[in-house]
Amino acid sequence: MTKAINKEVVKNEEDLEAVDKSKEVSNDELEIEKEKNLKLTSEVDELKTMMAQILKNQKLQEAKIAEVPQEIKKETALDKYKSIDPNERILIMNMVSSGGTYTTFEGHPVRFDFFGQVQPIKFRDLESLHSRYMPYFKNLEIRILNDDVVDALYLRNDYNKNDITKEELENIIDLEPQEMIAKIKTLTRPLQESVITLIIQKASENDSRYLDMNKWVVLNNTFGIDIASMLENFAPSTKE
Image (tube, rainbow, N blue to C red; front, side, top):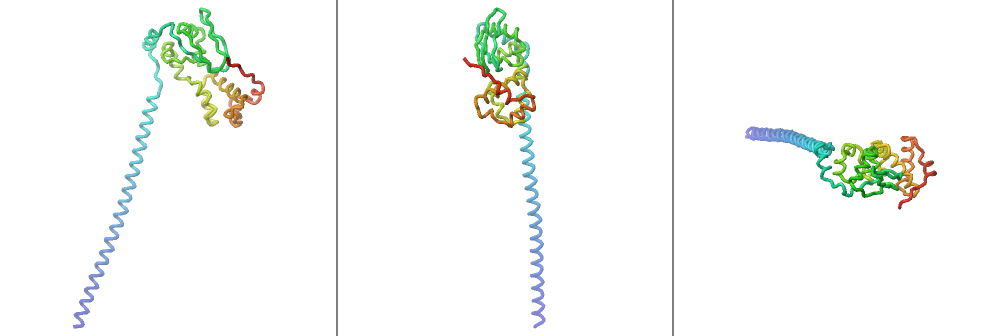
């Protein structure tokens, strides 16, 4: 009787041990499966990130392509030229610090006294000025504030390369030193000189934006100038 009981106990213990081992195997399999799922989730997340970056780069590239300035066709320029009334008033702006008087072939004077000054002028007179002072228009010393006229006078390529607004010119000083220098170097020589003169003029007026000595040093070293000495000898122009 005792032997039978012992056999039964042994059998039960063996069964329990087998169950425990089965549980251990199941737990190991669960851990392996869990690790596989975590790895798969990580790979999926990484793939999503890569796809998002690819799409972002593609959109940026498309935007850059869309922003590339297009050259004006001769036919388009001629059409725009024909559509402009010779007596239409066109606004032009002085983009350099010095004043000056420009005269048409007919003797009509157009005078600028200060940077950023705007003058209205008949298109036929503008044509005359453009013919007499073409380099001034090409290098943006005189900026035409009418896109159709820019195209009509075949200046679009020059504007695509050199154009900058009065506000952008004034705000170059707000850029970080190296970025500021890089931007100035893209300008035509007259506009570079205009930026330097503008800095000196505003510094003479104690405008804090233009009193950053670190930027003065960078400008001095890059362009071989001495802003402090230039400031001492600066004689501001008078706006009317």
